[in-house]
Length: 193
Image (cartoon, rainbow, N blue to C red; front, side, top):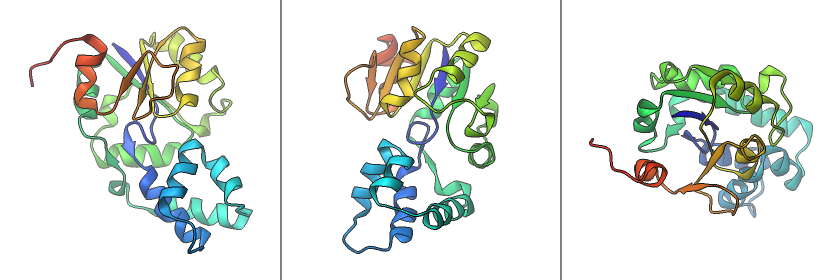
């Protein structure tokens, strides 16, 4: 199976860390990290607008996020086993290449991925399908996994099966709350561990 992965919120649990940083930038006592988390899960652009952040605050957030040690971002439990069993893994993310590679290298995971498309590569942002189409033509993708609808819409557009992770919005072919259930839900079987 060839899998196209989203990065933030799908491979790595980055949103709680981003919510903490954004809380520092917002500097309002009446805004909780939980509310920030909810808004950033929609999109960063949405959260910046929702909290009425100016350019200086957005730049401060980006600077602080880029200064974090890579091991601040923890991989989701069980995801490495899925990566090991896939024939090919590719990533499509809006995050920058430097940050993505830094995190993958911190866990020794760069070898799991044969291709990575990032926000630095000039493709239109999700849910536009151009980056997915490029990866599908090159690697014949069987499954798209993401944590938000914008992660799976391009896969649906291209006729690829989709899976939402920790998200129950209607529209995906499969739903996972943990990666320990991947083989049972996607293939209907248990894999000896």
